[in-house]
Length: 181
Image 1: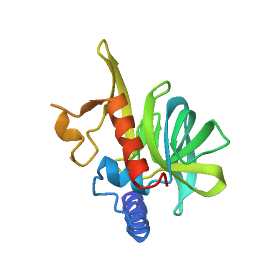
Image 2 (image 1 turned 90 degrees about the vertical axis):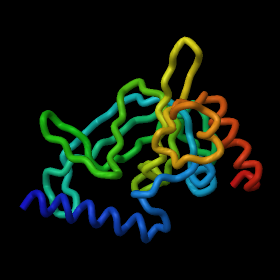
Image 3 (image 1 turned 135 degrees about the vertical axis):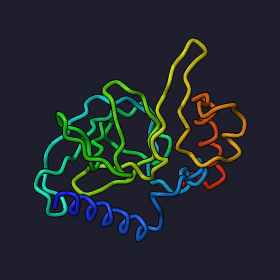
């Protein structure tokens, strides 16, 4: 019975995502994300708080709340420097609930996020491609672009790690072309 409820929850999420005009199973290019996501922010994860909540009739579903400190608003503005991102799924002890809208977040991780607002002042990651995690090494900071659909940006690099400055600069260029929407 639990498996059926989880399947129905994932099916419901899929149907919602296609009604909103975007599909979660399809990766997006950086340009598509930049032009369509209402909010683009770079910052740091402060807390990751998984909780049991009722969701689609399932009483012990896991919802994860991510407290996020915005360092830079690339698109959209907000008076709040601290955002709460609501993620469907997560892990409490040995119990894991996942799905295509489940994103693992780690405390102190730096990320570039493409977000959209939801109810009660929460935000959600806009697309399956909407979380780019920062990776640092002795050569600088890179963003993991492995969930982006390949486009002109990703063809410049030998792998999916692309310099943070390059991605941010490209986002700014796309916004200028679109009139800064």
